[in-house]
Amino acid sequence: MAGGAILSHRLRSGLTVIGIVIGIAVVTLVASLLEGAQGFINDTAAGLGPGIVRIDKASFQDFIGDAQAFAEARAKRPDITIDEFRGLRQRIGDRLEVGARLDAVLPVQRGNRTLKGIGIQGGTANLAELTTVRVERGRQLTDFDDEYRRQVCIIGKDVDEYLFPDADPLGRKIKLGGTEYEVVGVAAPLGSSIGASQDGFVQIPLGAFSRVFGSRSRSITILTRAKAGLAVSNDEVEELTRIGMRLERGLQPGNDDNFSVVTAKSIAAFAGRITAVVGLVLFPLTGIALVVAGVVVMNMMLASVSERTREIGIRLAIGARRSDILLQFLVESTLLTLTGGLLGVLIAGGLVWLAGSLTGYQLSVPLWALLLAIGVSSLIGTIFGVVPARRASRLDPIEALRRE
Image 1 (cartoon, helix red, strand yellow):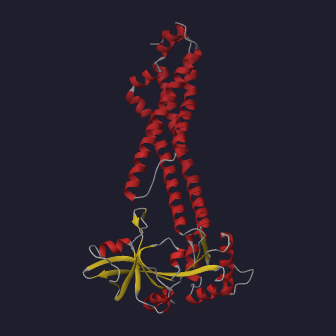
Image 2 (cartoon, rainbow, N blue to C red; image 1 turned 135 degrees about the vertical axis):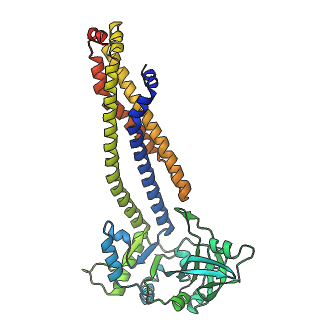
Image 3 (cartoon, rainbow, N blue to C red; image 1 turned 180 degrees about the vertical axis):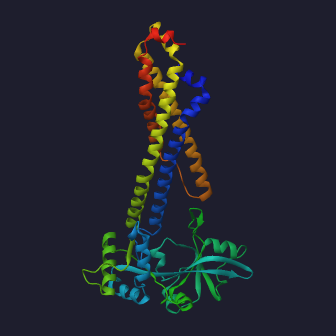
């Protein structure tokens, strides 16, 4: 009977639950996006490599919520220099693999084909052990290449496919700016992240990079990890790297670090803080919207009780118990809100699928958000349906039958 009453007033039922639909859709969408953001940052952490510690001039994760402090740190902190990298490698190189990288952006050219905005990475020969870049064809860069500043390079998949569509790139030359480099390796595909390809890069020896771009005008990134075969934990790697860098800079025990230490663990913790703050703001707001939608449901159900007073009187007169009337209206309000919740989840699922298709990133509605949406919508129907249901069950049958 509750279902029949809803279907007999389709327009009113639809207008009644539209707030529930929107509220549940927003809650589910927010949960999906937060879950996707958490997954993206975890993927970024994984991209740093297991057990890798990175030293930067300043990292935003150290200044969460304070962009001005981050900007000031970028401006005031000293650049990390190649001399500091070499000094750190001498201090901890017996236990840790220590590498360095410098970055720039340049057009890459071969013949009449040009790719703009390509990331140029100048790195030490051990970058293969400190990053997720792996050579699929050809060879890695070597210490010999770095020491003698040889003009050789490793290219990403995007550069390979665009500049060498019908040829093997190994042994051929490309231009970075105005300098030619011989291709000695092609990297395995890294895929895309948030719709952006990660395969548009060229790696060259750090020495060659310094000669072309200069190294004193920019801060380098230092990467460390435990040497193969040594039992050094990730925490020990981080501690050794931090202490070594402090000693290299002559920092006293009471002085704060004037550099940032980045690990997969710190990235994941940063992601957790960000998503927690965003959730703390957004979920209460959507909760308020759901309460308002519940009040609308209650008002519409009260109006329905007034319209159906004679029907209630007839049911009571032929033997229906007050609990039957109470249950009927509770079921009706719960069915309304549950239907709205399911529609909201479907709409959110469609939006999440569309966002995933447009960005190229894996987004999905988490199971806990689906169960929460169904549970919340049912709870709203039950809570806000109590007042109309109690009013309907307490009607006097004689007065109800006399009502026109």
